[in-house]
Length: 253
Image (tube, rainbow, N blue to C red; front, side, top):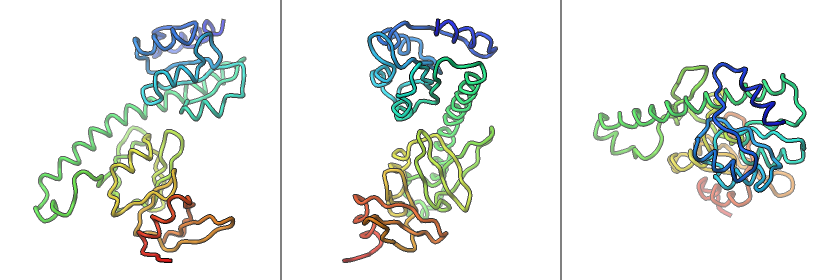
């Protein structure tokens, strides 16, 4: 009955095609791998593998955009830990379903723009070949120099030297540059791997800052630390990363 209702609702969408359904977790894994859908509506409690187990079996990175649909709301945190787009509790009305589908469309649009962004990254990195020899010697082409940002169907480019800090936000990263915040669908780890470590440092599992902007290191309550940037922003420093930050700032004890 639940699958039938979803098929009915999706069938009324002119640009949506239901490519398959599955009655249990094992068949869901097989269907997702063979049909390669753009979007999956996945129940949490199913015969065999549960919804979260299906995601782990396929792998969160390989899993299509996913909306969990369930009669129980006790697994919401786990669902979002697995980077689900939304979590819909049964019974749901048409408006709640439309909201979840609208959110999925936005994510899928970002994914398509992300593909275009990757093409632009390759093109931008390729321009380094025509740079003057002295400049080429100073810059390692393995490091990002510009980050394309998609917004409302257009792509703008942000120079990494204009970035203040970056904060992980689920499957996105909030990039703060010149008082503006941009949202990109990329992991913080992926950016960390491609940023010049001489200019950027990860101060928390969810925060990267441009070292040149660090103005002060403050000791907060409970033994925690915060950095203060020249812009006035204050950001938490994890205890495991404080010593490396102090070393990079030339702080000795």
